[in-house]
Structure formats: C-alpha cells, structure tokens
Length: 335
Image (cartoon, rainbow, N blue to C red):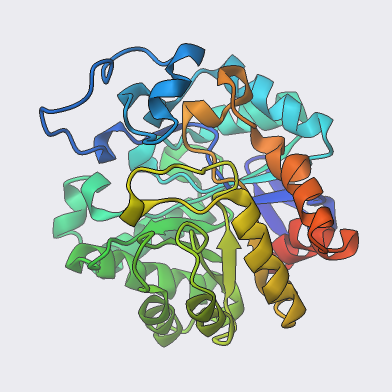
C-alpha cells in the first residue's frame, strides 16, 4: 500500500507518476545573497523575467518560490490532461511543505499526491536541527509517517528529499542517519538530494544501508545535471535507484557548472537501458522554479509526458521501457 495525502491506496492505483516534484516550495532562503546581485534580482517574477533566468535560475529571487493554490491547481490539471495520475512531492517542511494544501489539491484534481518528510540540506535547516539528536530527528520523521504531519491528519508516504551538501555536514549526517533508521523500520523509501557536481552518493548509500535500509528503497537524486555514466553505474550496481530529474533545466550558469541538456540526458539514459539498468531508473522534472511552470512559459509537470517522451522515442528508447520508468519503477520504489 502507498500512503497518499488522502490515505492509503493500492499500489496499482498509482498509474503514471512523477517520482520527485515540488508543488509548493520556497527556496529563497537557499539563495546566497552577496550584495552584487543583477538588476531585477528582487523583482516579482513574470513571463518577461524568463530572459533573466535563462542562464542562471536564481538571477531573480522570486523564481525560487512556487505558491498560490489556484496556480498549483492549474499546473496539476495540465499534467492530468496529458495522462498524469500521481505526484510524489519531495518538499521538506523548511522549504515550503504544506500538507493541508496538498490534501485539498488532491481532492479537487483527483491526482494522487504523496508527501515527504525529513530535512533539506544544512543552509535551509531550522535552528533546532543543530541541537537535535538522531533519536529526536527520527521521532519527528516517524511521527510524520505514522501519526500525521505537524498535527494534521496528513501522513507522509516517503522520506525526503533529505538534503546533503558538497561536503556533507555533521547535521546532514544526523538527518541521514535518522532517515536510515526510520526507513528501515517503516519500509518507506528515501529520496536523497545530493550535490550536483560531486559524487557523494556512494558514501550516502553506505550510510543508509548501515542503518538497515534495503538498497531498493534508496534513490540518489540529481545525477543528470553533470552527466557521469561511470558514477551512475556505480550507484546502480549498489542496487539503488537513480533519478534523472532535471528535465527542462538547461541552465548554463558557467562553463564549470553547466546543466546538461535534455537531449544529452536522453542519450545517457538510453545507454543505461541498453546495459540492463532500466528497472532502477526514475524519470521526472523536479519542478522547483516559477520559470518551469507552464503559466510562466515553462514546460510544466507534463514535460516528461510530452517533449521528453518524444525525444526518448526518437533516440531509440521503446515506449514500453519509457512507460515503465514512469509507472512500474515508481510503484516498486515507494510501495
């Protein structure tokens, strides 16, 4: 059974699912403010801001905020119109998780929504995380899963996304350990946000397995920003899931920190499928920016059901394999 914001459902009801998204999110506290920000940095984001964020998504601070119930509902209805049935929302509390709004959205759209729990990476942590013990952090996650999130009747169905930095901090290690303990106890899957340009995933997997987690309940996220096939294969050979979750993000930022293009992602994805790894790969958008919502000129949550799907087919990925990554793989991971 899978725990959604409306209660438990049979895994077969999940259908076409996005394994890692954000419906409401506030990442503004994660943006480094230097005092040398470009003109327009504090402007309200609208469609005319797209040129400003084409290279750097944080050139406009408001791009890091997704809010407004009716806005979110409109975006989800667009996803549903292209065959989408379920969304796993991986938003930790400190960056905007709203369990009651997720519940209302699910009621009004008919889309299954699975909420997450735990803590993001250290720059976003609530102050209490620093002083909390592993046992206290585990109790918090356990409560979200078994009782309800922050006094509501909405229960978390996954753990994560748990955040880690380029150098994993002591506080992040505590959160990871707590996630491993609760994941092993409850059987809930764990999503881990890893730094986009390092290869921390191997050590993170070892830490979670050391706490008793099964590899097949661990997913290492964001492995498709800087494409490193050998690193991805090392993770897959550990028995965990990896997630191609940056479709629609083709930011340049700088030569050293360029995001891969969707076509590049597809080509690596095809090579991994050819090597027999299809059953451990998840495909999604990880929408976390206004510029990704359709109403602001982005591709929306349906991007992997439309443009990416076409790209996959044109590059030799079969319809059966692509659909399996959006259905069977998600179901096996979180059930």
